[in-house]
Image 1 (tube, one colour):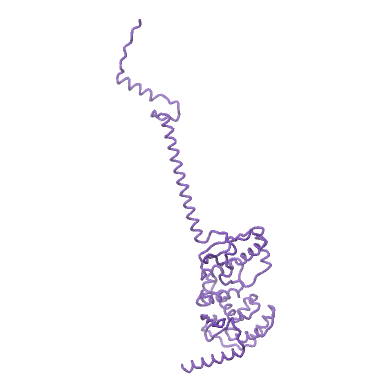
Image 2 (cartoon, rainbow, N blue to C red):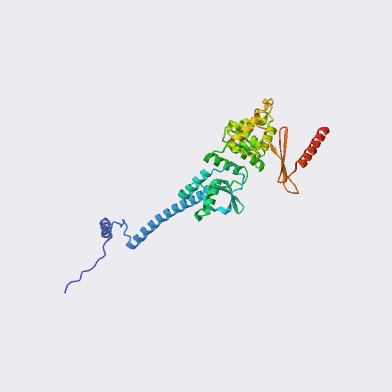
Length: 361
């Protein structure tokens, strides 16, 4: 019978040697650390680490998305994001247009370009209640309306919605856009300044020119004022105003300053239908028969400022409008037929009134 071996507890020194041996033993798994962590705990730790890294990535992506959204909202508020708007929600006559003549050949080219390539540059509009008012892009809007008659792809048009209102900002945007894309004629520049004053947007033609053509040189603004004078004095009688060259318009403005308005208006009123060349020949002849007045050097050759008075509405229809400038008052009756006899009677009454003012003075 074998003799049983008595077990004895190891002493402290032996235990320390055993632990040191286990610690120095190479690990079979490369993922193990110095501490003898159970495998399941190690997997959980690694998953937590990866999850933390994912959370950081998500937070970065979220921050980027929020930044992009803020920038998009800022761009939209600034009118830099194009929206597709139904054509029937856009008022093309929201403000008075600066361009007077439509070039059908250029329009045909635009129509073909839109069919093939689409609209490259959106129009500009401003909110007007539940609809939109057109600021710039009159030709593009008209082209879309023509195309929409046969192709529903053009029932909506890309547009920048800007906070321009119907005041000075709207007129400035329209003029700037047309100056960049297709230069306005000298007469159209002067005309839009006068129309903006008539709409009450500016206090005077002088102020309108300074704001609408702020980027132009002083000499160019002076020419615009001269053409504004031509429009104010002769615009309702001229048959081919856009055809006026810069030289011709400045010559007319100089004649108007020298008192040729009555002679020029009479010549235009008595003429029948004229072509461009015949109309200028008529004006040139009228200027040659007008006595030349001594030029007032103190005025510096600049056109006089014209103050537009508020219209007076007639109960029977129509209204009376008046414009006051240095040494001149112009009164017009719109929307009502006045006979020559009645007009003569009005003139005599006005003369009597003005004479009474002089007597009172």
